[in-house]
Image (tube, rainbow, N blue to C red):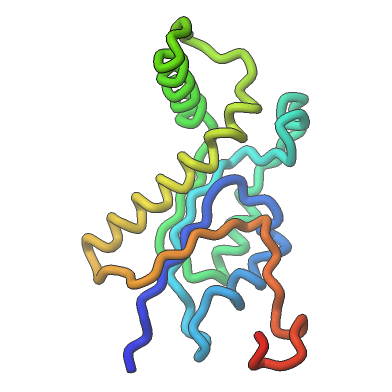
Length: 165
């Protein structure tokens, strides 16, 4: 029996990728250990809360991403600064203002809250676009899973038996 082709979209801020990459590898594979294909988009500047980011409490996780990449079956990855996200925020917020019959603005004063609000959506779209480009050159995927690096998956030791896992 043929195994289904499975893709995983990792997106957003890569919080805890340095802790969770092994769990991601274990979680996203077939029963025989064959890994799923991963498409990832991450923001380079990582914060742990909008307030912390507004206060300049941000980290660059590029080296942690590159280390995790050695273990994961990543078919395509993009690590991006916030420039495109900030432009997107201005655009989307102005669309909402227009729909609500409010004034158009050329700038946003508090990007950190908007980055949290809209960044995950733009990042997911970017990862999905990479998957679609890959599919155009290869076979189509049967299953697409969206996942995050800041979610810890239970491993087999968390269950009474491998059947429960």
